[in-house]
Image (tube, rainbow, N blue to C red; front, side, top):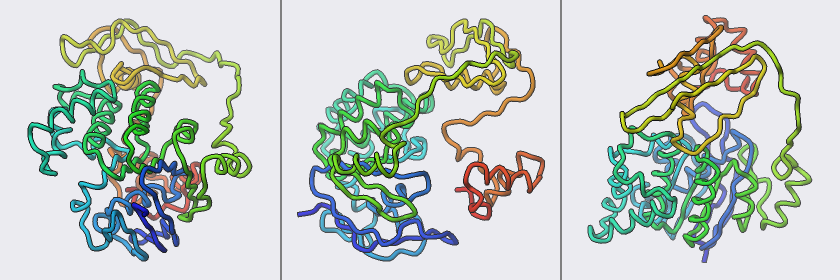
Length: 366
């Protein structure tokens, strides 16, 4: 018997075109489903509907039916599904409520009424599965984006749900941490719906693939059949382009000399870093979660003063953090972009068109 059935599901957010259009599917116990599709295709909305967040938390026009473990999500509040469904979304900061890591992971178990003596072993197992036991007593406000995402993932694993919904769960994880998490998911035995930008790993893990575009399910097939379809219809999903290029040798636009920084005296994040960035370069800043990548980028952009060393910035720097929601202060996407160009609506509209968002100019950016 299917754990989840979706019948004729359509949904539109207020004053927006349909995000989902007549979606019907069934999910069997133990299936691992890769949910693929371009940005804005409806993947996140489908996950919200499976969690019961649509239509209860996110308002709009809802049609059709979603049934999870025999429960109609229109009649059940998301909290009533908590013992069955666990969800991890793209932005970990939106999901963290406690100040200490172990307490954060225990919080969901406490709300489900799990016996106290059983809670801490489950917290320990969840952290251990992600090689994150060292985060146990850390304050959540001190964690990097990747470390915080691991905490959210551990919280979901600790619940031992029947249905696990994952929206870009490894977007802020380094490759090793991402592999550990996806391995833990594979061993969980739950029904899993995974929207993942690491397509190759998602396809390796999945038993079934859904491809969504324009709010419609264009493909619902077993993995092998799906890979054939993707190779023919969406080749970039299975054969990403990697090309060699000549590194530019332009003038230095930023120079860091002997840069050091520590959030706590006993925990240096950067230690005597030297770095030159040249005009036209595209530099990949790689390293494990918590290694100092974000701090280095913020210092290079002039947003944070180093505690030692010097930074020379020639010209202006733009900075985009892991959480774009922090930047949004206007009522429409056009107004938001225009804010950065002294109110020049023409330039703002052109910028939206350039990134494929011209249609969204009048919509709220969130």
